[in-house]
Amino acid sequence: EQVVKEVKNSALDALKKIYKSGDRGKNDVLKYLMKAIKSKDNRDRYDAGWALAELGKDYPGVLVPKLIDLLDHKRMETRLNVVVALCEIGDKSAVAPLVKLINSGSEEKESDRETAEVRRLAVEALRKIGGTNAVSELVKILENRGSSLRVDAIEAVSAIGDEKAVPSLLKVLGEKGSRQVAVTFK
Image (cartoon, rainbow, N blue to C red; front, side, top):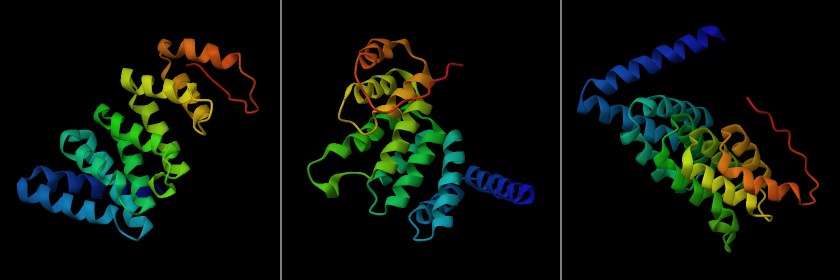
C-alpha cells in the first residue's frame, strides 16, 4: 500500500510540474483530468478528482470554476467526485453552488433533484469549507424540520463550532425527534 501511495504522489508531483511549465502544460493536464473525471470508469473518475483537488489547492481560481461547472454533469458519479474535490480544496467560492445542489432535494421534478449521497457530501463540503456563508446555509438546513440532511447539518455546525448556530440548536433541543446525534467538541 505504501508503494502505491508513493507512486500516486510521484505522479501528482509530475502533473504539478507539467502544469506549472506553461500554458501548454496547463492545457494538457487540465484537458486530460477533465476528460478523466467524466469517464465511465470509476478509477479514472476517482483519480482525476483526487488530482484536481490537489492541484486546486494551489490553483483554486482556475480549478474551482471548472469543477463547479461539472456539478450538473449527467453522471452522478462525476458529480460525487467533483463535490469531494471541492471539499478537499475548501474554497469559499464553492459555497453557493454547493448550497444550490443541496437545496435541489426539494425540487418538484425528481429529475431535478440531486441524489441523497451527493447532497450529504455537499453538506460535508460546507463543513470543511466553513466560514460565515457556509454556517448560515447549514443553519437554514438544520432549521428545516423536513430536511433529510438536518442531522448532517447539525454535525457540521458542531464541527465548525460557530456560535451563530447556537439559537437554532437551542430550538432543536426543544423538539421531539427519533434520531440521536453524537456531538464532540475539540
